[in-house]
Image (cartoon, rainbow, N blue to C red; front, side, top):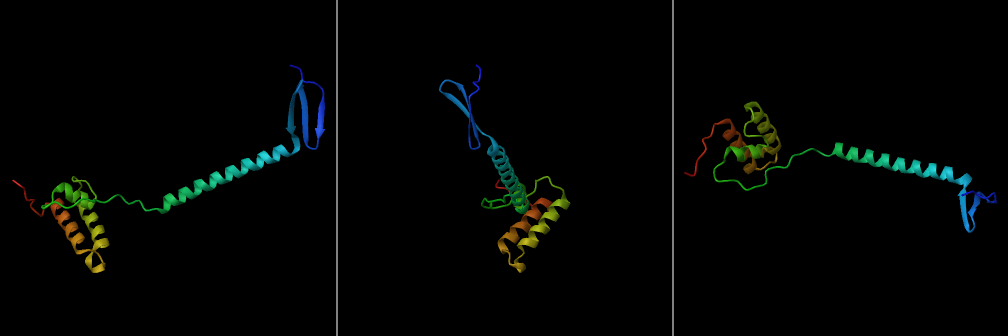
Length: 137
């Protein structure tokens, strides 16, 4: 289809008549700066959101979820490992290091709970083999 040579110029808009009754118009001088401005604004807002989400991620502490269940009558190795937040097969030095960290945070002399401190100590003893586990049989 041949574009007719009819051209109208109204302000910054150029229009062509492509076929009878159909007109194509282009806003020439204002379009490019407008598109560039919108693209720049979109890129800036996207970069800002990425930076903010990254800083929120870095600022939030990475704390694992603690054991929430009630305690059994006699503590098992599984329950002791859940209380300390380690595996049942963890080496002895890891058990001791985790116990020390939890006791610093929960010691009764520094405002911690007596009950929590007792359970942390019992869990350490069970995992180190110092306390014999009672069975229900």
